[in-house]
Image: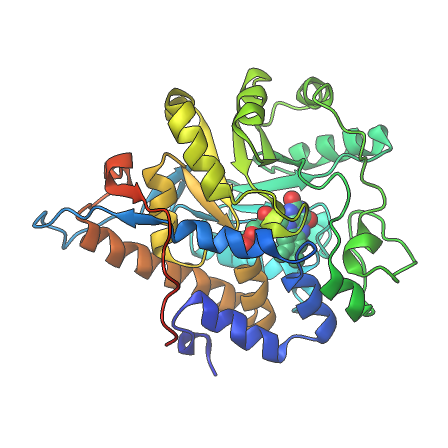
Length: 366
Ligand code: FNR
């Protein structure tokens, strides 16, 4: 079926499961250990309910947002994810093109399957908000050279991912043991016996510390965003180090199982440091499948949310058109939900629009 046949993000996942190779599906879908964090990422959103306000003149609504100062059509960005070519021969180039056409921000993974040159050639405008995600290399000189190169190539920010000191134990990926071609800009291990994740992560330095932050800042003028903050204390610490933003994330549940859902950590941060959220750029990712999820995070002060798997699945199923479809679905859902919530622009969302409920019943099967 065409991408338009997908009415929601779950439809896209179901379709992708049917058409992706078993290696691609296993690598994309896999999560840590027993998938508790993976499930909790979605479940956490379901514990927030709205307080809608009625009769507010909602025929005109705007979903426009700003991510690190770049205007975006929706407060949703493409998370950095490895190996988009496992799903489609054009790989990350599809993501870059679709991000340009739909006016959204995107993080490119250091473990992307397209080379930096390919990605640059796919970029549609020099001012396109394309960010570059890194893991620190055990060989710091290699990291330094890469950071300098991506600044020169016009990437707009560095995302430093810190929630995966080592790859999590992902059994779905390990069992698939499939063949694949590795990332273009980093090295891959020939021993693929532990699955894709382990094969591509060997260069990453588990000994990264906070002291590496000033070192990175000394190498580049680009804004630095720490991705993978998982508690209030580390959020505070990151901003003490002068970073421009944080992404609260548990790596889509792929790292430590029982790491808390980002929405839960955002709620704690909102309760304990509302001042910080107000002043600083805080983002979350993990388990976002609905426009209402996005609005809930924004109510608690997030500036935007990231999505990972949905874009990989859609790219695998339909290429560029699929990636655009994800954005269209999210935009329509956000617009409709804004109208029903009684707001016409995202800056009208406040903590008073949501309430926490201890237990939400699972939805009935459709
Ligand atoms: C990821 N993620 C990730 N993060 C990162 O910083 N660098 C990377 O190379 C990757 N690679 C990667 C591959 C795959 C297949 C997935 C699914 C995820 C994590 C990603 O950026 C993001 O945090 C999660 O995907 C968000 O959760 P959802 O939207 O997939 O639920």
